[in-house]
Image 1 (cartoon, helix red, strand yellow):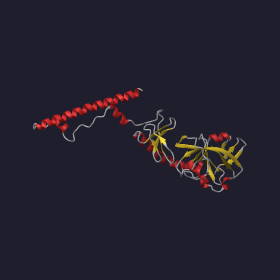
Image 2: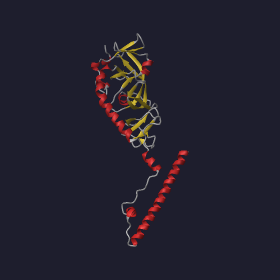
Image 3: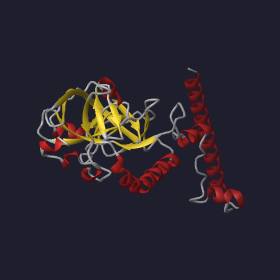
Image 4: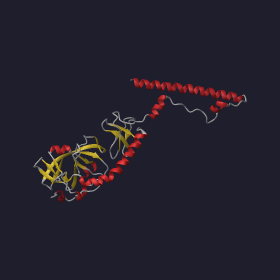
Amino acid sequence: SSDALLAQQLVEEEQKQNQQRQKQEESDVAYARKLSSNGTAPSGIMGLMTAPGNRRPPLLSSFSRRKQQEHVNSCPGGHGLQVSEIIGSQRALCNKCKKVISSGNHVYSCSTCDFDICSNCVSPEVAIGSAMSNDESLTTNGSSWQQQSSHMCHIACLIGGSSVCVEMMVDTGAQSSVISSSLARELGLRIDTRTVGIASGVGQARITGMARDVPCTFNGDMMEFTMNFLILEMKPSQRLLIMGLDQMRKYKCLVDLERNVLIFGGTGGLEVPMLPPAIQHNSALRNPYDFRDPEACHIS
């Protein structure tokens, strides 16, 4: 290709310059030795050039300089890069250096372009900016989350046929229903690992599979529906369960905020009361295991 040909020409040009420089240095050294043998010490510029420690450092060709400065500032589509940490069994491949990014390292990604970059290849400006934006979001949103958490829509649910009652967030802004990997494993859900990808919203998370036809029971044992959940790879301490628009459309759900109920089956359908703010867990990292008694799933 034309790019490969240009790169080859630049390499050959660099090699030629190095050879010429080496010949010039050898000539300078020979001349200095000749003067020294005649009892005349080199002076001026020639003396500085041949004095120990004052040799000119090798000059970089335009190709070498460009190669050193090649850092990635954005994805091919110009959408920007979001930083996340590789955890657990996750792996990512850097689109620039082609090295595998393993657990414990940061990856800079664009889900739209399916583009991943390691910390060695991303530009320092992007790396510093991502770190600062993450810190700012944690400090500025921490208090607002606690103030608004009481206004979230949560319902109590027995999931996967277990005897553990968990909190399910009803989120009309989520396109898909999701469950964190740690919660799915602890509930013993069967996971289909053929579904993978990246979920984007407030931050990003890896999709590592899907739990299909999971039985979800509401109002004690009065109502049961089967639902599908995408599995999000998150830290073990982060337990998350969300009903998104996919399952809400499937069961023709209505969110009645005046009466604080979720209605299955449209107008006149089956109602599930939302949990009162007083018994919702006030934490940015919600713990669904606040309700271990199945009787707590029946809220009158």
